[in-house]
Length: 278
Figure 1: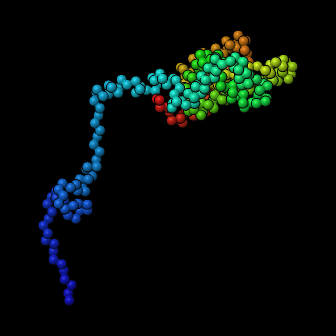
Figure 2 (figure 1 turned 180 degrees about the vertical axis):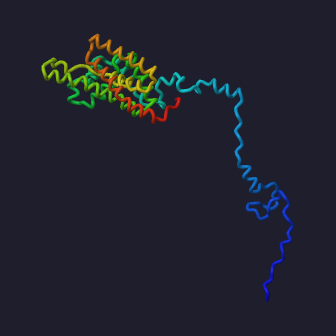
Figure 3 (figure 1 turned 30 degrees about the vertical axis):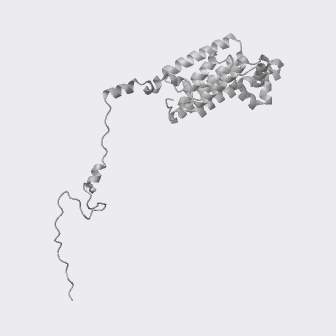
């Protein structure tokens, strides 16, 4: 038998605009279904509606929308924006309250036990280096206490809390050792009396001085020079007054330590993600 040929397709052509019966995903009897071409058109995202002049004016008038440089509260530490400075400041407030209102004999014992004099540095160096940084000489209204809040807040917003703590501790520890070790050597050589090994030496001023030096390297030149000039002149005046030369030398040394960190803190600043306006 010969192979039969199927008859030609005599089905009526599909009207233009009507859905194709063989198209996948279409249901018979359901009107106004989208075809394949219509799906692509429907997937195009329409442009967002632009805010009107009134909405734009309200946005500009909101103070929390100001740029970071114009937000004055960013000068102060916050729990989320600067957790290291905020927590440290609370701790210093607590120890300052103890120093102001506790029994004087107890306060003296606490300060003496936290002093970074030569005797304590030889016996318990880790304990006194940490303990001496828990007190503020002169209370929370002293110039170094105010500088602590402003400087460490600004530094932490630029390089982060852990790195700010590192700069602070670097200045605190190195400046303490640089001032106390020569005292011990002078006592051994007979140039100073033995009482020089026992003195009250505590506070956050060395760490703050290092923070000022480090922060200056992150500021523009027109802010950096006045900051260094004003702080350096204050330290030189204290040194010339010769009231506490060892501490005054320690402040100058700590400032130099902070300046020496400029290459590192600038690299940290370049990689820091920035600070939210919290």
